[in-house]
Length: 151
Length: 151
DNA sequence: CGTGAAATTAGTTGACC
DNA sequence: GGTCAACTAATTTCACG
Image (tube, rainbow over all chains, first blue to last red; front, top):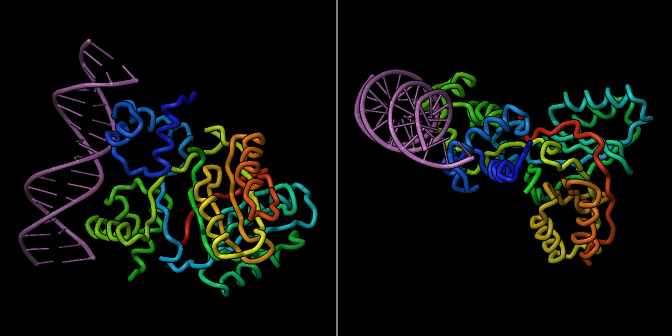
């Protein structure tokens, strides 16, 4: 299973995955060889799901982030699955959570501008017969974005 | 500024940043040298904000994701800044958006379990005098998580 | 699990078209 | 911007303790 050293390694790689194994070993207090073995295993085991660059949305013209809460008409299992599929396929949707509470789904939508958001709403939400209502909250500030899962 | 080749490079690196420049060049239809120059510039220009590993939350015991909407008491600028600072400092908060609409802030909180979420709520929200109310929506399914900013 | 050494591959720099 | 060559640094494999 996973020990504390693995957790420290994951903590470091979630901040920076371009460290050399020597640098990583230094950070977590181990040896480069051990770090390499562990990191490779973490990748093949699917603990590390991807290694990616994060891009500043504004720098690439996606200056509008919108948080959308969605209520489905009724929560029949096949309708829910349909909606999930649609959200996975929607390029504007960077994150989608199925939730309990006031809403059924929460979306994080990244688009160029309000026109592009309008297009998204009209083509992906209004046209979906399962969507009963939705609320849009436009992000004024992306205060924090650290897609980490442990410290 | 940024041309189409830069955008293709960013698109590729947002899926996988462990490609060699030769592989990257192949993918985007350019040369390794050109890719290296561009990627280094994209990093130094802050277009690429970070290079990180994504970790499966369940694999490391953070099986609970909660979307929290927060309303502040009044939106005085100093209070807003205080709240932002607190959220940036809160290890449980992986994302924080300041928004318009029904809420003032939307948080994505990642914790081990409901007890840990309870601790978060009590120490970071209830004790904050600026927080008027908040609503928690527990994620039943992390349908999509692609922290990309362009396709 | 850690070390060190050898082989391989990738990153980096500079000269050139 | 592309190509090539040369150098440096990192990854990978292996033998060993």
